[in-house]
Length: 377
Ligand SMILES: *Cc1c(COP(=O)(O)O)cnc(C)c1O
Image (cartoon, rainbow, N blue to C red; front, side, top):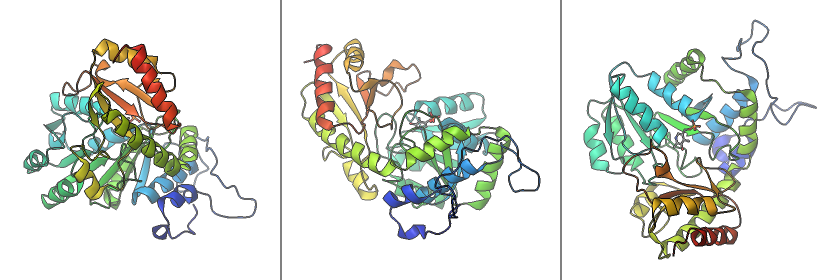
């Protein structure tokens, strides 16, 4: 990989373009190849397709430059997260969100049931509750802002308290992204992404990543991937790297749109509550401003209507797609409680809105027409 840059001197907008390029040579390629090989000639450092390849290394370098650690790519965000949990001995105590990303919460509930892990489920936004749960835990598993409640967790305070208690900390950085916060710089041991979302940004692949500054931990995670087998397909990885080139631009635009739409939604009589930390009226605004470099592009809002009307509203928009997932160039929304696995603490009338990069007035017109189609006034 290209070692020419002094990454510390470059800004994120430049890093996403420059990182993960092959070494410069005459007629050498600007982009890494899609390494479609299950095996390699003997004698080299890789050896087998489950252990590594040039395409993975390129994306891993790029995410490492953004997150500030060493990175491993996994087959999915969940593959990354379960590999992290796989390092914990049987019966380890961990502190985690009771209403975080439903995939993680569901997995932890199942691990708790079979006593694989002992999970202390807490409200991550309630700092005192988290701090009280730390003593005796092996790991605090954080996510901020939380998905889909859009609650900002006091990462600096909780991370430093965890470290003071000798407790490991992992942060799911999917919603905030490295444009907005750097968990490793705040002292976390691990930063995780569903690369499926903002980093790749086009709703066309599923991938995950884990970054860490701890060499021993990196080695254990690499073994977990190697023998757990949650490995990424090279084509998906290549697409993710291609998507990452525009990550900063996409995120900036989505974030501007989100701020604008959250402001309009917050003044709208058809809506009872808007959850977006960029709003001065948001419960987490001051906390977000204290350590985040932006407010992201995820809005959740609660509509004064029945679940059936809201489902119809989500399905009536023409630009905004009624679908799950987030972080793509296209705007997507859904009523989260349509999923049986969603936390019961999430209101029935909550729409999670992943704001894309479209023209903001076009998006607002689409929202208005969806309200009208569902006869919400
Ligand atoms: C989507 C998501 C995941 C899971 O990632 P996949 O790539 O779908 O496996 C984990 N955490 C958060 C916050 C997510 O939004």
